[in-house]
Image 1 (cartoon, rainbow, N blue to C red):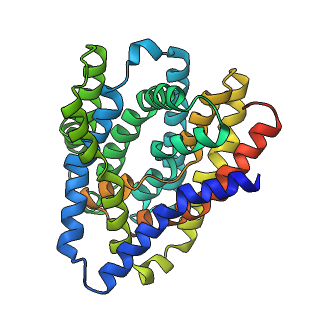
Image 2: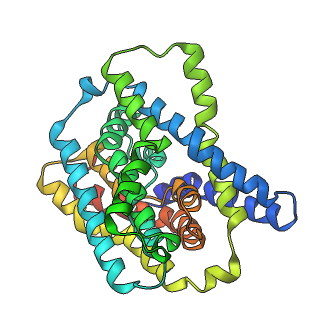
Image 3: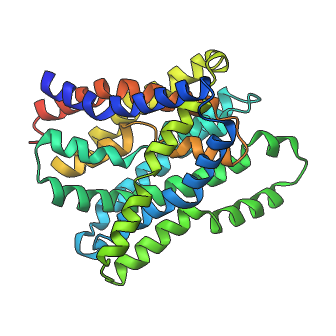
Length: 324
């Protein structure tokens, strides 16, 4: 268990250190507000869509397709979103935090799947590509569609407007259809279904652009972190962190076992349910009119504590014999 904890910390703490670097560089004036705004915009419109396109486009979705597993990922993700949204509207009414709170509670970073696959010692490359593709297919499009809808409907600026629900829904549909992240997913899925091989030069170029996603987003989170304001959001930050890292896995991993999912499929579900809140949440929240303080705070806390929570869940699943 200690070995797994050390490996998990080696995987997650570098992300925390990049956030810390962004905070220090911004406080010393090395990173300007204009740079942070530009970084957020670049990640949202270019780097993240390219990353999602490449993740799906490089893999043969039809060859690894498991409809039952994809449907389970979709149903669990949808249930998480709707329940958290309903509870947030009840307990955070009038705070302007509903959209951010919901998003940080359900959106995970699939990038950490590769780290966990290594920890559990399964067939690294095969498992990573197959399970990440299926999990992305079952959850990530829904992640982003619902994020667009929720962030638009729950935006502080939207709440201050007097438009009717039909107008808001029309705006949401337009936002979904023109969302660059969803366009990247759709393009990647089409590329995979058409069995088009990825030329080496294109793959290298896309890989370089996609590789900018996490570093830039993490620097932006750190640079945009407002310590004084964050102190005012300690309670929702703590609740969201516990929900993200402990509550969702506790609720749905037993259900996954009942459905017969074990080993690499269960590890991928652990990532979907209980890994760090993806830095893309912060970028999307800022780009869609939210303050972003709560989002940035939860990205920091889930990254910091996920090494311990993921190690705990891996220890439990291994002890019960559900992963080898």
